Image 1 (cartoon, one colour):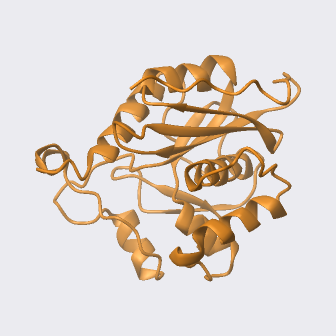
Image 2 (cartoon, helix red, strand yellow):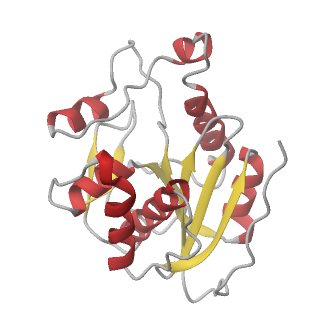
Length: 222
């Protein structure tokens, strides 16, 4: 399936500002949806099925400082939900349980293929944007796992409803001054919400993380 071209950026990528990227991860056919924010405002977006193309876009074209990704950054070690996922559930935040890699690959219907695409993306980004291992985030480029439902839950005081996710998440973006016109699907909305979380973290905003580094953090704004 051919990649869709990125839009011409509406704002220039100035060295005086910094850019963050949020990425919604889908399966092999759906691919990746990425939104770039420069100085916290919409700048560009890209849809592609190619993890290497997306990594190049993040690294060389928009020159992202921090990238937030809606996909597991680590696999389960024992077949149980990762610590970050268990901690989310303890808060009442419903989330997927990541399987072991072997279980993901062996699934007969390809149910976890989107997680395998996420794995490919983290690998493509690792040379320039390794996983964040400390908060607050330092000056160097990095990436981290995030989760739009958890972002919404935190920003709306625990009032996050899956049935109203499009409306609630659009409202959060609108409150932050994000241009909603290019965000025509829930994939773009989620990518933009991830990018806004990356901007919050890169700007020194208070974040919380669920889990621990060995099995993966999920980072959200406080």
